[in-house]
Amino acid sequence: MPMSWGAAMARALYGPGGFFVSGPGPADHFRTSVHAAPAFATALFRLVERVDTALGHPDRLDVVDVGAGRGELLVALAGLAARPTPAGPGTPDAAARPGAPGTAAGANRPASVGGVPDRPGRPRPDPAPTGGAGPVPLARRLRLTAVELAPRPAGLPAAVGWAERVPTGITGLLLATEWLDNVPLDVAGWTPTGWRYLLVDPATGTETVGGPVNPADADWLAAWWPPPGPAPEGPGSGYGVTARAEIGRTRDEAWAAAVRRIDRGLALAVDYGHVRAGRPHDGTLTGYRGGRQVHPVPDGSCDVTAHVAVDSVGAAGAAVAGTAYTLVDQRAALRALGADGGRPPLALASTDPAGYVRALAAAGAVAELTDPAGLGGHWWLRQPVGVDPDPFMAR
Image 1 (cartoon, rainbow, N blue to C red):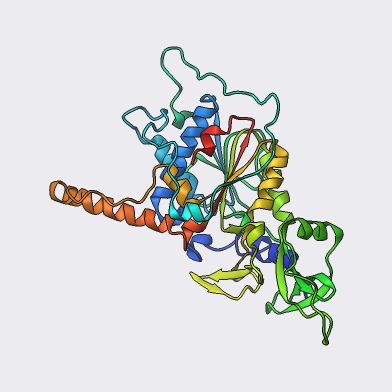
Image 2: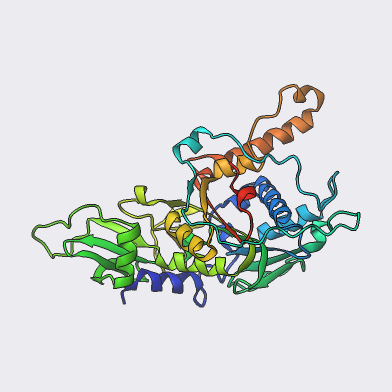
């Protein structure tokens, strides 16, 4: 029986036996930045250190990963926190560059800023506990929480907590890497009578045209997904679909709810997406199974995903935080965190051949993360909450 895409996605992805709550997990079906290279976790750990510094090295620093898969990213961050460094495990990465000049990709997709004024009376970072010894090492203050509807994986380290809902009172960093694209949403078609819902048969993926969109979705579409032009006219059923839109209101609400759980810190969403000036005419809804892109059939056998209207999501989060957001592409974001993918100097091949090979492999992995035609095309949406945004907005 046909149903809305939002209802079909919710059941197929998160219902009993759904794609994300059963089986081995997303890593067996599609490749994300988390799985592509250790350099991604290393760059995010540098961001964790920056958040820690901006917050004044609090007694507890939260890192919450929403849509955590099987906890792979948090396990990597726990390992990086436990690793001794010459400056001490609790010391921010002094070598991380505060910013990187614009690249060709960055020039094509410049950072855009949400125009929300800073919240008056925003608290400043607390002074670090001193006593002559500096801050307590980060590894001893870090609280890692994975948010996922699937059962806790066997063998997950005890250092990583597991929850079905985003915890309240977060002081630190909230991460959402490729979470929002799987938040269920409805899909609309542009017809001679305006926007109408597209319904789907969950067994086959076959679509039919339903009724007009409700007032809340109509308002969202008017604000964030303009129609392609005047409604078409001519003979036929009267419901001929000439364009599609993925109604991102549910994602705005999900992101705003997550941001609301932060007392002080930063929310970061990393995802494929688009902005109002470049909405895709036919939408982006698709499926993935076993490493291959497939027709989106919402029967629980495959991932069903659609790109994120990142400017709409950003505005929703900024309204909650009372602080402007920024958007930047992953290529620029990773370079600003020290992952530039540069080739090692050729002289290293003579003095340390094995080291040269390792550095070359690492550069290749970073190149995959920063390729604008692939993972480098992700948007990074950064939303500060109750903290000076400057350390996070450097480009």
